[in-house]
Length: 94
Image (cartoon, rainbow, N blue to C red; front, top):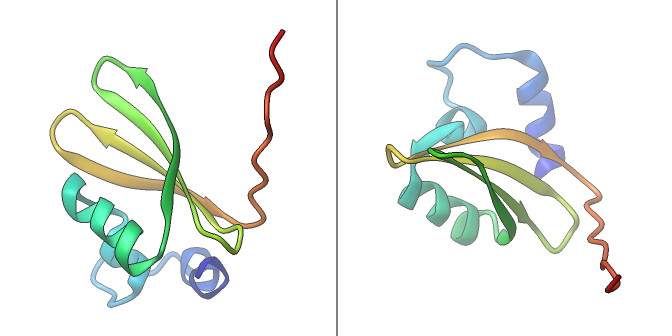
């Protein structure tokens, strides 16, 4: 999925363009979650607070593509980064 979207990101198309990424940069949080899980086949792997009103979420696909999403207390979520070849690491107890 990421490989298909990369050229669109690099071209910085205007907001009115009808591209898959233009439709999902920011969305209501419930719709963003639905797009990521059902349309892209992603699963939320991690999340953490970025401040009192923001949560960072990491979504990954089985093929290694990943999406970083900021979810705001207002109910909006935005894709802030995408990439490929995600590799999860396991922390051993100290």
